[in-house]
Length: 368
Image (cartoon, rainbow, N blue to C red; front, side, top):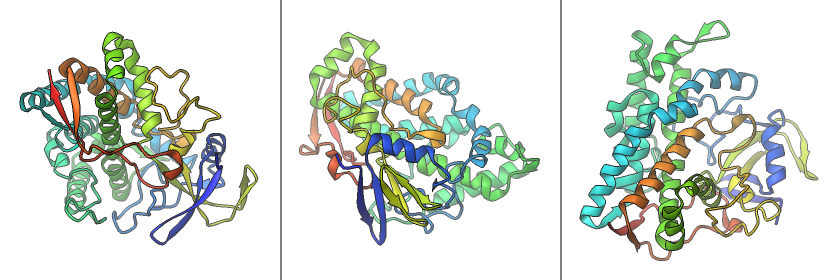
C-alpha cells in the first residue's frame, strides 16, 4: 500500500499518512507534528464554526497532559461502567419501540439519542439530553442543506452552562473545571468553552457512526449475529473489530512545526498533514485480510482511537456504548434486513480521504 498521498478538501491541501507504522511514528512526534494549532486539528478547519480552540486536543505536551488530567475522572473506564445501566435502559426502550413498529431508524431515532444521553450523563447534565438530541447528526452541519455552519443553539447552550458554572459551580463537568487550577491559576471562560466544544462537537459523530456500522454489519451478515448470540464473550472482540473496520474518525489533522522526515518522506514547516486512521487500520502488513470484518479478530492493534499522547479520552465510553448496543440488539431482535440504503458498502481503504463514511440514513426491518 501507499505510505503517503496528496489530498485536498476545498482549498485545503494536505498530505495523508497512510501506513500503520509511519502513522504511529508521526502521532508520537508532537514536536514535529503539532496539534497546538487552534481550529486546524479537524479537516477541514473550523475557525468559522466555533469561537474558541478545543481543550485538550488542540494542545501539545506537556500542557496537553495537564489539561487532560482535569477531566480524566469523568471519562475513565469506571465512570463509563457507572453509566452502563442507564444507557442499557435507554437502548432497551428504543429497541422495544422499533420492534413494535417493525423498523429501526438506526441514526436519528437510535444512535443519536443513545450517544447524546451517554454524553450528558458523563458531563453530569442528564436533564440536557433532549436539547443535545435536537442538534441532530452533525452539530456543525445544517440538517436540510448539509452546509457547514455555526450551531447557534450549541453556542448558546455552552455559554449558559459555562457562565452558570463560573458563578455557582455545580456537580457537573463545567463545575469541575470552574473549581480546577492549572499551574496555580483558574481556567478562563474560553478554556471552559473549549472543553465543551470538544465533548459536544467532537465526541458524537464517531460513536454514532460506529453504532450504525455495527448494526449494518449484523443485518447484512446473519452468521456473525448468530455467532455473537451463541458466544456473547465475542462481543468485546466484535467491538474492537467494528472500530477497526469502520474507523469512525477517518483522519485527523496535524501541522508541521519544523521540517522533518517520516519514512523517507520530507515534510515542510507549516504543511498540513492528515493522520489517516482508516487507512492504517487496513494496512495488510499489520492486519490479515484487512478488508474482511472478522468479529473474532485477535490480536487487533487498531488505531481507531488514535495513538500517542492524543489517544481519544472518550474511548472507554465509546466502547461501553457500542457493547451495550450489540448485546441488547441481539437479545431484542431475532431477524433484521436492510430497508435502505440497499447499495451502501464501507469505503475501500484507497478511497478514504476525508470524513467518516457510514450509512447515516440506515433503516432496518426488525422483528423479535
